Image 1: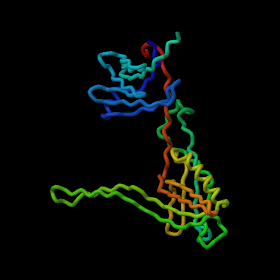
Image 2: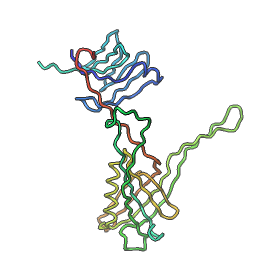
Image 3: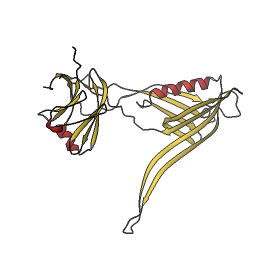
Image 4: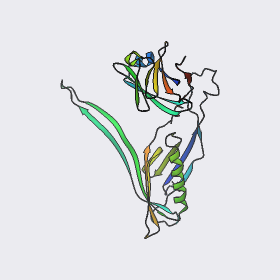
Length: 88
Length: 184
């Protein structure tokens, strides 16, 4: 599956704030102005477009759900993935 | 006030300067203050009820300062702690105007301009009428009621105290995607 990946935030920086949740607003190229809410609890998740995506859920990285995905890279950056429709 | 007698409302529009970030991207800036460009103020005079010259006159007005006060008594008997929070500092003005009044048309046009700028805070309204004054205020509400039985309209304006220095709203940063199975 091919995704458009958008870098949203750095996980270590977010956890260092001690906040339970934080909203990020970006102008996603090709999508528009969107908000992504990061929440911290037993796991860290992002909520985008009514979908809650937990980082490393079920030991899967990226975690994919309903055409959206979340990926944690080696730099601790969290990426939001939006599925690119299959042209065929 | 006009000759110290008539009430006056003054609309002051400002333009916040553009962010310097995109244009001077490579020069580090230690601080960046919001750059306000003031436009000429626009005064509108109101009449008093006895006059028929000015098409808008004040029927009633009031100023209200509302503060929430929480008093917390202590378990050790020391004097209670008092915490206060401002709720409102507002002036409410009830006006009558003639339907064909130039001042009414101008006032309505100004309110429409203000509506576009409420989030960017690029405006301020001052009102002076004797002891009822508000400087650098913001519009809280505005309503106009017309009656088919006469040629008068009933206008209600509420102004609240505004921020001294409006701050520019942060721009929404853009993000360019990386397309692939993984963002590598």
